[in-house]
Length: 391
Image (cartoon, rainbow, N blue to C red; front, side, top):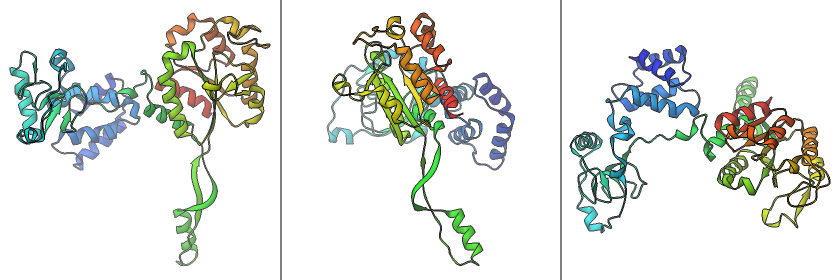
């Protein structure tokens, strides 16, 4: 059985190996999971999946292979028509009315009853107490109330669900999807460079053991400075115009970067880098920073990341006085080259669809200028970018 499961995972492009399968078999021989599919799911995922970006693929493959053994987690999405889950009203119940609603009696009973409902129900129901629907007191559906139910669709209202239909916590961690704050952090962590600086206020356990042993058993406590992320990052963020559709994604990236890097500096620009940058978009015309000052302020060990779609008029990048907002005496390309010459390694993260890049002259030109190190804002793209910066 496990061999077939192994090949199912391989077909789902989860990179599992024979060695990992043998680890799972050994764990099963020691009865770390026995006669319980939930336990086996957690154990097999722990043994077989080494990168959380593959959790969603694993969940899909697991659901496909073990369909029928744990129906609630594995029912195909199209088994319940979307119309059944369309919420049109909410029923307001008093505390006395809620107290009169009885639970079915545990998860096993809920699963058994849900199977029966799926066989017998043939139309939409709303506001009821039995069928799969919305706004009622049935234990199946959403937007209603039951002391112990299975939420199918919708959003949690009363925090009473004992199981959530087809819930996959890591769906947005696949390689090809756009990023959220959580998986941005996962990808950015690969740029971390740990170091210990400052006052010695953290116990050095290994040093203490070694020193105590060398001191004939007399306790000799050793302390070390706190370990922290010493990576230094300089962010340049394109703002406004064609970047407006990507505001939320850029906010997520900015939030993730600020939480991951102690040494983070950032500046905004519009379309292309010129002689001035800014940190406050509300005061972008009267409170700016000289790009030359920025070039001379930060040390060579900073890693430079541009965020932008690189899409603009060719004049903005290639011509003096081509900026749409002011009369720039030097080209944007010249200022970009100064940044490349100063810090060496520069990457450009592009939130637009990679298939569109070839249709924009400036995107191609910038990509060529930075040595091809323009990456899409997907987990895979960010991982490749961070891998290059970390070399």
